[in-house]
Length: 113
Length: 110
Image 1: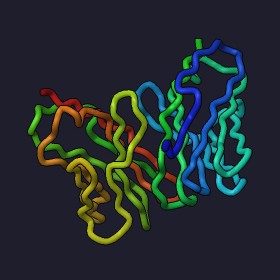
Image 2: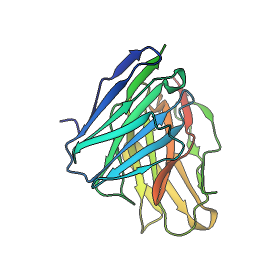
Image 3: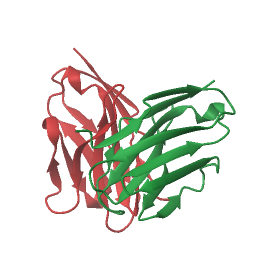
Image 4: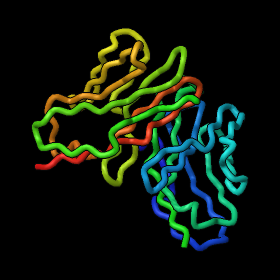
């Protein structure tokens, strides 16, 4: 059974579109995250979400918005996509926020043309 | 500023060679340390972690890492690498939130 799953695995879209990436974890974890990995493999945290508390990395444009319908899901919605949004997006979860190891999803490769 | 540094951007080794990848952090206070591996086209997987206790930590696939508090380091080692170890390796530190190093690409030649 997949612990952290993401859909879709690949997403190709045009500039200006709005798209969503879904993430689900079946580990019973309290905290979920979104990371962006750029072409140089650099991982940067975008959001963490714990018990309906959202912590935003201030460098993330407000075109990005996480939505959590319940504790097991944290979806990422992106408005008005730009070329620079092309990257691999990883969802992760941890038992609680703070000093707990994180379990990563398989990633979603987003290509904006 | 708090940071995680991986000094080696790309390491190329032959099979059976020994490996050491450097990781230094600049956080003060208590930290939890991790090494993750990302095989080509795959997601990040945890290799090993250090929370407390014995500073020499053994992980999966023959990897180990040593936490040296005085040097703010958590270097990853493996005595004999295999071709299948070719991957990107990320050091990560939690002191509050998790921060990743820039990653080290390891290429093992058969």
